[in-house]
Image (tube, rainbow, N blue to C red; front, side, top):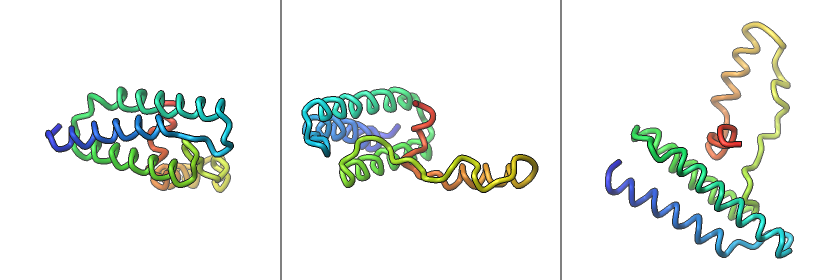
Length: 122
């Protein structure tokens, strides 16, 4: 990891913890805010530790983009949790054959960047 990339990653890590420190839930309830703050901190720790040994620059760039997207979406919607994809699983495909494989491939390609690591951790 280059020094510039390292600084960028550490800056994102600090930014997430600053956001968590100031976080207020949409409901305004103290208990809900505390729960969401803890979720933000735990999610950040888990994902950063999971990716600490990544050496591929393209993969590092993808992780940085995912982190930035999740921060922006969380701040915009005031929800710390990743927004799900609102399509039923395999709702458009037949249950077998080429169409199913094609549909699975399309679904994997079209997965938003902010959800790439969510299934792996959850």
